[in-house]
Image: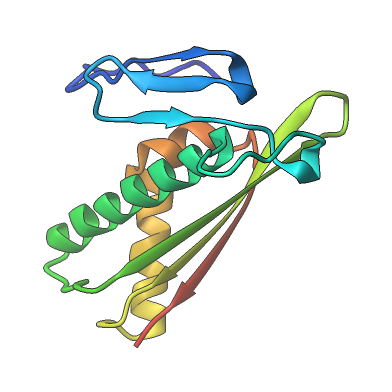
Length: 147
């Protein structure tokens, strides 16, 4: 499958030193985090640190939430109060190396469950850039709750 070309609207740039036991920061300084490998992965699990998986989960949840709002606006639906929870796991994968898996839980308190499911599925299939980037490359589970 060929990569799709985009016309960039915005570009975020971050720099890391020290890998998973280091520091990452965006060039505009809006994000500045210290990282450490969690104890479950054999690292020090230092306090007040994060991981790439935490950053990915936060970014994907925010992006997916914004994409839901976009789709809802197109369909003239109210999705106020929607909560998106993205759980991102990391572990060894078949064939070697490591991979990530995502479980996306979306609660849309303003719509019946079938209507919410349809809207959220459209968001995942057609709009969210994180979904486009990861489709077919990670284990992905989508759970939807409605009113």
